Image (cartoon, rainbow, N blue to C red):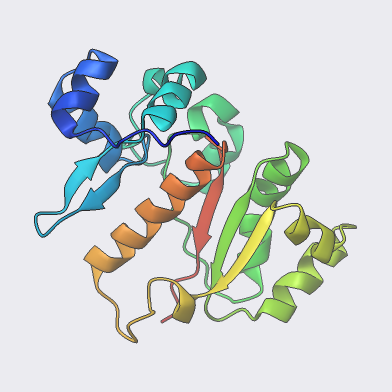
Length: 196
């Protein structure tokens, strides 16, 4: 049986990776590097195996995730995948049925590239989303089984406490990013409806 390695403190992890503590904090804050939070002060602790995987994956060399937003759908559609990887796209649609058409090209690009999508629905139902995926010629159950699509109602996501707070929403999104990266998915799509 293999022996578990002890978790490293922030100081130990910064020495281990030969980077500053500030850089390490930034990587964990923007979701590039997973860490555990412990104690009443919520201190960071790092798994050495996760640090090794992080270095080997080259994620530390990716551009800053807090890149400027894309101003419109047509511009976003023309961007290269590398440019979109670190972007936040916000689309405003006037009618419920237009939502899928705006989301569709991004979703299909990710599915066919084998990259996962998390879709948080509010006005749309799970059944509607499954039908839309089926209309694209895809088996929604198979797409979900393969981990390429996670459908999550807003009540199970950032509205879990039955109320909206920006801090909880950001924390929830950050957690999803960290989880996907820990599952070896450095590139994924996270989308949510904001009808509430």
